[in-house]
Image (tube, rainbow, N blue to C red; front, side):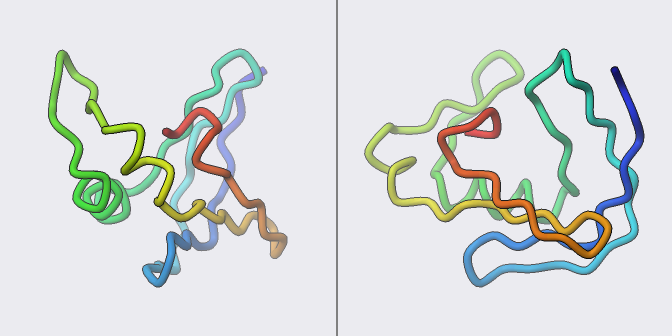
Amino acid sequence: MRSDVPILSYAYGDFSRTTKVLTAMDTGDPGMSVSSDIFDKIVSDAKGEPAAGFYVVDCEVAKSLPDIVLTIGGRKYPQPRNTSWM
């Protein structure tokens, strides 16, 4: 089931943004969408290397990255780095 969900804020380590962006979430797809500013911050911190439309990240670097926390409807939803976003 796909639905458009309003994300009120993103937090990633000491980086956070308040937003009113709609993101598509689908129970059949483990991926999620984030705004370009938080995506760029994650890629920079992870030292990601582009490869075929994705980014390759060293496993040791990935272990040190903070979780992403989404705020939806006033409730915080931590997204550990070992889930679909990393």
